[in-house]
Amino acid sequence: MNINKKYLLLLIFTFLSSICLMAQRLKVSENDRFLVTEDGTPFFWLADTAWELLHRCDREEIDMYLEKRKSQGFTVIQTVALAELDGLQSPNPYGEIPLMDNNPLLPNEKYFEHVEYAIRKADELGLYVALLPTWGDKLFTESWGLGPEIFDVENAGKFGEWIGNRLKDFDNIIWVIGGDRNPRLDSDDVKVWNAMAEGIAAQAGGYDRTLMSFHPQPKEDGGSSTWFHNENWLDFNMHQTGHCANQGTYSHITHDYNLASVKPVLDGEPLYEDHPNCFNAKELGHSVPEDIRRIMYWNVFAGAFGQTYGCHDVWQMYDTDKDPINQPLRPWKVALDLPMANQVKHLKNLMLSRPFLTRIPDQSMILDEQIDDENYVIATRDDQGTYAMVYFPTGKPTRIDFSGLKSKNLKKWWYDPRTGNSYEVQINHSSDAFLIKPPTAGKGNDWVLVVDDAEEVFTAPGKIDTSLEIGLIN
Image (cartoon, rainbow, N blue to C red; front, side, top):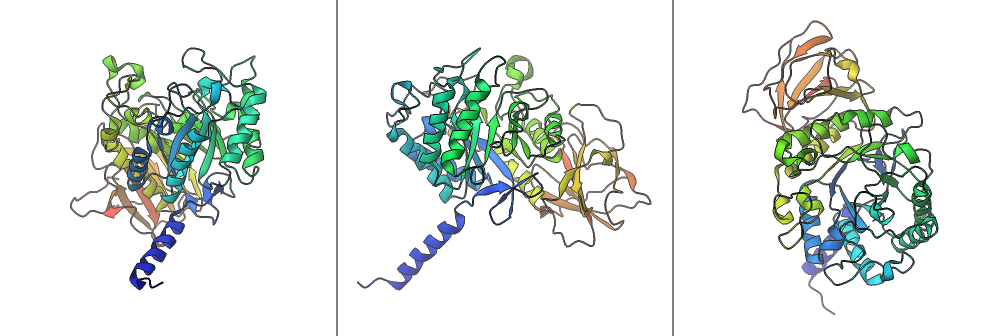
């Protein structure tokens, strides 16, 4: 058979490109603070919550959604197999429900072929899927949720074994147990979730080949760590810090970061874009981008290995033919291009622009007394002293101590979280501590000061912008 050589080369190139793009299996870094790929490359978790993706979207919509999020710099998609919004009894776009007779021991293969389609498409794009086997209302519907309640210790373990075996060949799955519910006292809830997690691990390759966490409800101190920190299956801790703009989310990260037994930690569900603040839209309105940026930078600078974003319209895949949940503002396909969906990549790009696996939080750099409000300035640095970053959420002038850096010869940049642009600045100082005044101040004027050891060969933390003259006051 005579095949056009150019066409053959194109096929080979396309095949090799797809192989290179497919996701490597993730694991916990050697210092137990971060995630890395199998070859040791640092991994920044930048997730979107698409809870209803597998339940409400057809394959064309799945393709469009995943390709869009990939283009916006996301690395992880958080979604659910047995979905929240009547996920057991309301069929997917192809008329399939996940279980026969609501029985976890009778999964519907046709439904899970659709689940597999989405995971495979994500893999082709180099995206990871943080997959919840079920939403928490399938364990209990107390206070809210449609359920029905179907899980107990025995069938949860067996369902875990089944779904773990069903999807064991995918390297891009991160397993997330739970689903917006905290285990109740005087119940078997902890046993149920443990059984499901152990079942998955047993069939998906064991603890060494599975990466797993737990998605809780908001809690004042620990999230997943409260119940599961010492379980062998829990590889990293997850918080849901809630949908309020006026809370110091960094304290949740700090709590788990300081636990004696070290595990990575992140915020898996913060304030969503387009969400009514604190469920009271009449008084507080819907969330605005600066509130979401502040939470995300706070969390990562406090020691999180990444951050989840969410949009209130997108998680529920809302459209005009769907019943709205808690005042969505627009159809989900329109909401894909909201401001923060296009700004979150700047956080990922900033953190990966410097050595990532040696980064630590360091509030000793902040010399001024602070209170827990929207002005809270937060700092992180390399434990080798090669760089530091300080986040100013409202541009408040603050005294900073850079004695933790190994050199007195420092190179400084302002980094704009809204654009990802960098502005090199000059600073004259005769001591390690000096007053820093960001370029602009007030709500919505957040900035990151990046300070490098000038002897290190670091590139600019973002695209260099010379259109503005920006300085510092000391």
